[in-house]
Amino acid sequence: MAIANAHSDSRSQAGLAHARRSPRRLRTDRLYPVFQPIVRLPTRSIAAFEVLARWDDEKLGKVPPVCFIPIIEKAGLIAEFTSHIIRSACAKARHWSGEFRLAFNISPLQFQGERLPEQIQEAVSASGFPLSRVQLEITESAVIADIDCARKSIERLKALGVQVVLDDFGTGFSSLTRLQALPFDKIKIDGSFVRSMGSSRESRKIVSAIVGLGQSLGMPIVAEGVETQAQLRMLQYFGCTFGQGYLFSKPLDAEAVPGLIRLWGEQAEDPSPLDLSCNQRLAQLQAIYASAPIALCFVDRNQRVVSANRRYAQMMDMELEQIGGRRIEEVIPQGDSGVAADLAAAIAGESSAPREWLMPDRRHVGLATVATARDENNEIVGLLVTLVDITGYGGRR
Ligand code: C2E
Ligand code: CA
Ligand code: CA
Image 1 (cartoon, rainbow, N blue to C red):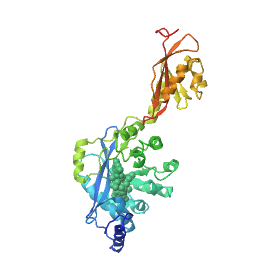
Image 2 (cartoon, protein in one colour):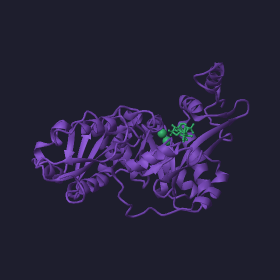
Image 3 (cartoon, rainbow, N blue to C red):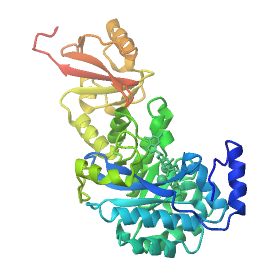
Image 4 (tube, rainbow, N blue to C red):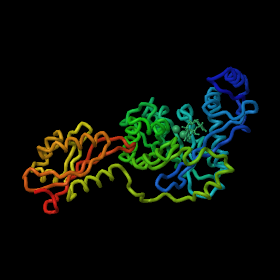
């Protein structure tokens, strides 16, 4: 069977025509798997390898899967192709040390087929690789058309003992509530969101929302396409569990994998991983905020008070409930024009020295500091006003 780019050039048409003329057999000698590690983010230990197909063509050289898979699908050979990739990957991986999983991509076309569970079972069992260490990646586009039917197919696959992962999440416009009905073991965020996190606040919000969603549904999140340390830092900050991408490793030929395993070591799944979720972090910060012995007030970019702690309300001689939503100049001591200047400077990203505020009771003196609060991409999202009572420590009286 000839393989060519189905979209880009005239070779594609020749390739397709040839595929149609060919007897319906797949030439497997030039078709082989490569392996890309999926790592646990806090420890960087290997959790799995995604198996990616490669075609080494006599004339065209290395042809990427996006070019040849559509041709294989059109030729009606996708089941044979998947079995070949699974058999050859499992046959190689069964000799490697470690408890890693092997993750296989399942074409949406094949996912709809009745015989998929038997085909997977046959291909994996033939190699002696345990089914319990197999995971199947199914794209969002394959499941959104008919959720009920997708749920049944996923359940039949899970009955084999394999894990089922939702791939390319975020690209298919599926509603989160509909996806909740599907018993996926993990969710993979599409690489396009991960790559644009540095430049787009929207992408950061989407990634952090997906990670939060996974946490609340008990589904670990895999971020694919991780290329930079900055992306890795953000993902860890959001509490993402797994990562995959060129930052860790490109897809490797089978021969290179045992060396990588030796180098990185392997680690059994941690039964009680540290809770680094946003919820956990939020609870922590709220506890600090509420019980801090100093007064704290958080202001948004429009200089309106988002929240203040009880100590702040006390020092301002106000009820806590009266403070939220007010403009900051209404909840600071009156008559000090320097304060407004400090706030404006802080919003512009400039720092200013701590300033003494005479409290509304005109007896106490506070030392006020205005600090900028920044998001995971270092953009200013608001201001934190802190106030310490320094009466009796040299403050004005
Ligand atoms: P996918 O499942 O989303 O796989 C991830 C793709 O992103 C792979 O491309 C991988 O090499 C690439 N990648 C990984 N890390 C990075 C990174 O940091 N930066 C960038 N720019 N790319 C990265 P690949 O191998 O060309 O595969 C493309 C697609 O072809 C796959 O997308 C999958 O949908 C399909 N595919 C690959 N192998 C198979 C297979 O055996 N069966 C089926 N049905 N589909 C396959
Ligand atoms: Ca995949
Ligand atoms: Ca993907």
